[in-house]
Image (cartoon, rainbow, N blue to C red; front, side, top):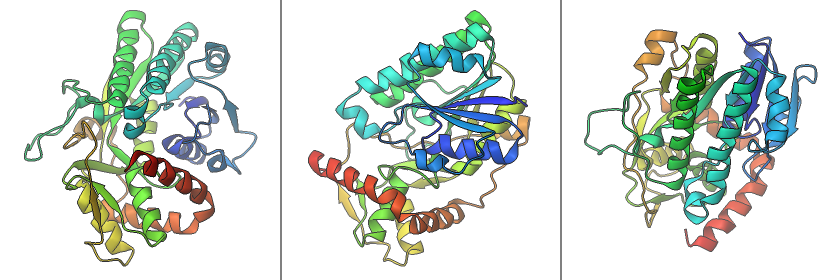
Amino acid sequence: MPQRILVTGGAGFIGCNLVRHLLERTDASVTALDKLTYAASPAALDGLPADRFRLVVGDVADAGVVDPLVAEHDAVVHLAAESHNDNALVDPAPFVHTNLIGTFTLLEAVRRYDVRLHHVSTDEVYGDLALEDPQRFTEDAPYRPSSPYSASKAGADHLVRAWVRSFGIRATVSVCSNNYGPWQHVEKLVPRQVTTILDGGRPRVYGTGSHVRDWIHVEDHNAAVLAVLERGTVGETYLIGADGERSNLDVVRTILRLMGRPEDDIDLVADRPGHDLRYAIDASRLRADLGWRPSYDGLEAGLRTTIAWYEANEAWWRPAKAATEAAYAARGQ
């Protein structure tokens, strides 16, 4: 197990949860590198042990910041990314900068210092599946990204694999389904609906709500990342999923029911351009090779704890909620 781990995007949703996971479950010291954009939360890193953790503010695409940091560490988990599809449709440039240039910059640093790299990607790189299709994505699925966000992540994945083959860097890739859990920005589906309901509002769902996503709690995702970092085979890709396929409408109805509201208390709004129909992950390689299993018994169990977290942490999400709703109103969403 590496003893000095750098987490890029470490103040973001998955990143801050991973930092806490590593500090709780390993003896490693952890550095979080984060640009602290609107989606980051330094507060999520408050109270961590000063002798084992530090936060460095910087851009993953800045070699002057990245190189000396990588040189100080045994391993890097690369999570830094622009990830919100709606924002990518308005302005794709930050997605190209962070997801492609940032990944290139990091790859050159780990090549220079021979540091182990784990790169975290998204199932959106595979495009989508038909709603009635029984198949799920596997590690051999062709790449068919359909948005500026997913295209930039697909490009980053290809760069990592090319650096493994061309330069022999020690890297693995994981491709994960939709995460949810504590510290997630309110622009994302689950926290947006939960906080809207807490405010007494009606959730809004794109189109008919029939789009299917494969859901996993962030704690289970990060346990899988740690398993790959510890025991994964260099050059391999592992899909991370918890058999959590649910339509967006079903997810929102479940949240409403868990929060004591009628399940039909929903407004359907115009669909967004290029909206993928269905994602579904086959995580059998991860389970067979590394022995990973999800700890949450289904989506509802994870949603209960997530709802409770947002109920207890209004002071954290309230400022972001106001800004996010204003941005959506300006776009007519």
